[in-house]
Length: 341
Image (cartoon, rainbow, N blue to C red; front, side, top):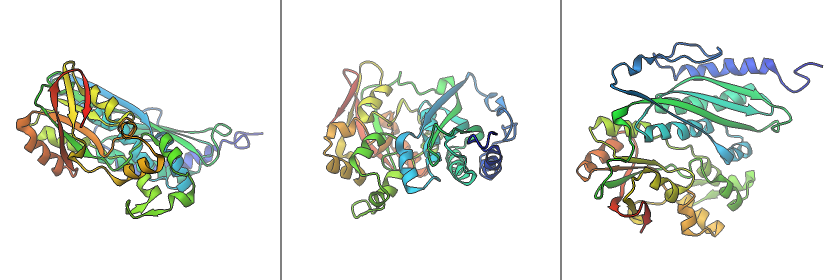
């Protein structure tokens, strides 16, 4: 008896690391001091030296049951983008600049080519957010996961000068809400998605005219990364007063998180186009509107609040970063919460 006969192939692990390296190399930043394959990742603090009060911000998350679609579709090159996005968007939401990322892949069987494909998506997400992929872990766990399944999670660290933290403390009535378009469902609410639609290859390969693509392609579209857009707003000289990453819990849970006491967000539902995937989901699953807005991003992946005088500059900065902005509402005085009208 040996480890390989027990289900863990150490040689496959070595091969996975070698195949990953070409993708990881694309994410390197000058502050990275270690090579992949060591016991830890080192990142120089020189990036902080000009800040008055350098403050670390961090985020950790996974892809969740969206991975079930990747298994059925045998498509593994974009879920890594989702993993990075869920972490770095939270960091950017606080005003932070992502610095580095680490991933964790647990699988039933280490197939080096598949692991490398997953990591290629992680590397793409890191490139989109200018974060270095400085380490990670691939755990082969036979008997715990089926051979053809895996889980994927990650952890990111960023930095912000304390004075630039986005906290919502300066939010006031009259501030304008600007939303940034999402790519679709992103990485939340897939337990409900999997109840609404039949999770078979035939179902996911079905083309829908209203989607302009197959159901599977619409659902697996990677989560938008908004780091560049928020950086562009800052570089335009605009102070974001509050910011919300619209993830699980949709509008009703996430928008109040950006508000201070005594302020209320008012969002106009017809101020932007709701992507057809949400309309199809609501119709197919007979899901009421409140539940949809309480579960999904409904087409807005990030919402910022800015002074009314800064609206034009903010809109232009978001467009310059390649994202699509919409003026979606305003801040009013009142009980902390959100009104959809």
